[in-house]
Length: 153
Image 1: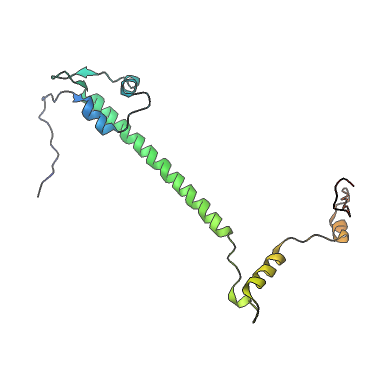
Image 2: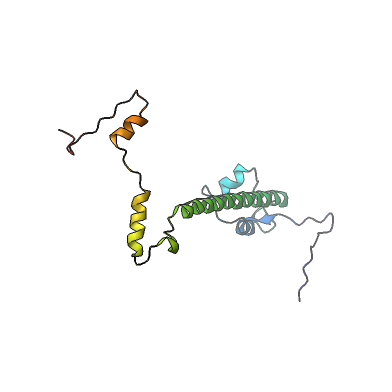
């Protein structure tokens, strides 16, 4: 219905400055320091247009739009990297979750919960006997095991 074509101004025609009210709408949220500090930090001179509105030159506006696009691209890239890192963390977490026992490991007539608990106990590290511990010791260590539960005795 409507055709969109790029309109290029005739050469030598001065389109004039761009009003700050329009520019601010396109640039997005107001910076924490305010627009005046934002423009002055970038060397943008605020001028008055033909109806005495605060404005900036078209060259400054182009530069500000280019900076805005570059900042948005950096923000999108940072978000993409953060999302990818979150996906990798989630995949590692999901891989570490115990999935239970397959059905073919269940003995006939046994309750599944009992088999899973027994399997979990079998997977836990077991304490070595004093003989196993002495044989695995390198010889320069001595480990004392108290027979009492009370640490003060």
